[in-house]
Amino acid sequence: MDNEPKWHNVHAIRAAASAIGLFAKAAKRAAANAQSGETQGDNAIPPSRINVPEEALVNLRRCVAGARWSKREVVNEFSQGAQLVKSADAKPTMSQDKPVVFVVDDDASVRESLNSLISSAGWYPEIFESAQAFFSHPRPNVPNCLILDVNLPDISGLDLQKLVTVERTDTPIIFVTGFGDVAMAVRAMKAGAFEFLMKPVHADALLTAIKEALERSRTALEFELEVSALQDRHASLSCREREVMALVVSGLLNKQVGFKLGISEITVKAHRGQVMRKMKACSLPHLVNMAALLDLA
Image 1 (cartoon, helix red, strand yellow):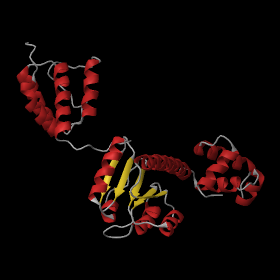
Image 2 (cartoon, one colour; image 1 turned 180 degrees about the vertical axis):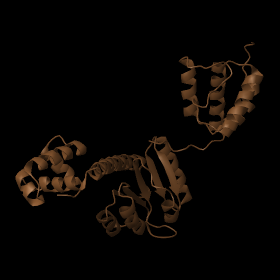
Image 3 (spheres, one colour; image 1 turned 90 degrees about the vertical axis):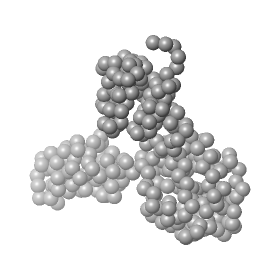
Image 4 (cartoon, rainbow, N blue to C red; image 1 turned 120 degrees about the horizontal axis):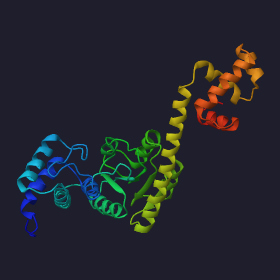
């Protein structure tokens, strides 16, 4: 085989990469698998390695067979082809765990500059020109925050803040506006805004505010996950076990719980043990804290 680069086939690779919709991250992972020796033949790329449409795989296999390359060479070439597609055509997609920074501003130049600033900091920007466009976007399950202008084409930023505070409790709001005053800033902060900045805002100040807001969002999401897990555990309890748990965390002794429920103290102890096991509580104070989070006390 000659040493000349195989870029004569880059168009075929490019077409396959476009059809598959594979971004560079997945391609690098496939290349790493190949380099570690995970091969299953020279001309086959199994669907279990890359989750792609079967039709795209068939097309790629044809390219492989026609060029008579080894699988390792194919993966390397495919990786390079995917990189070309990404740099030339593909729009970046949100990583599953990358923090999201929403921007709602009716000024196109502001949206463009914030988009660049947020991307350069390693976060994923989602840019909108109206409140309606923002609310039509699904709520992310990753740390996120909202950079919001006061003057919007449909509703005011302060009115949007009220909706976000109720619907998206894990989304801190950073107001960035050129038409604010002290009274407006006080109103926004009293309503729960994380920060209120006036345009033109220094990039460092905004980046610091975003970083801190994302940390607050991360904490809120972790708390929601914890409460959700506790709710699932509590739902696994039987009706009697829930009754016992409610009385135990209220401070009653086993004998008192048995008297209230009309059951023996031994039965109370058995139910209490089941409650501790199912709730994964290591002590009574731990169980009491769980009940407080579930608002059962």
